[in-house]
Image (tube, rainbow, N blue to C red; front, side, top):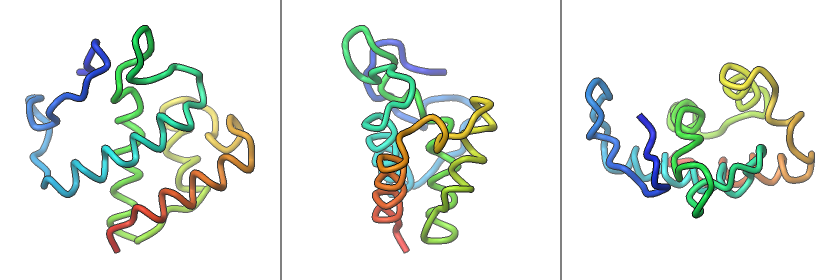
Amino acid sequence: MRASDGARRPRGADSGEPRRSQAWRDLVDRVLVELNALDPYGLEPGTEGGAPWDEYELEAVPMVGRLVRSGAISAAEVDAIWTRWFGETLSGRTDPARFEAFLARLDDLSPA
């Protein structure tokens, strides 16, 4: 369930969603900040009239999983996650320089 007012919602509030540590939730939020800044579809997440702040959460969670497990995430891994949800690669949807900078910022978020 996605919030409709653009505000953050407590992730533990949804039934069926596994409880995660605060550190996990914080990392998901940090990845969401990066995805929202990239905003490849011009949805303006978290803004008035835009998509909910957590619009890209379904994509952020597996990215966080990869960062936690491996300490980094590759372009191919991001593209595989993106293709699952959108049927196209994020790298193909984004300016190459912006995409590379996005990957670097994700790797900088790694807890490893």
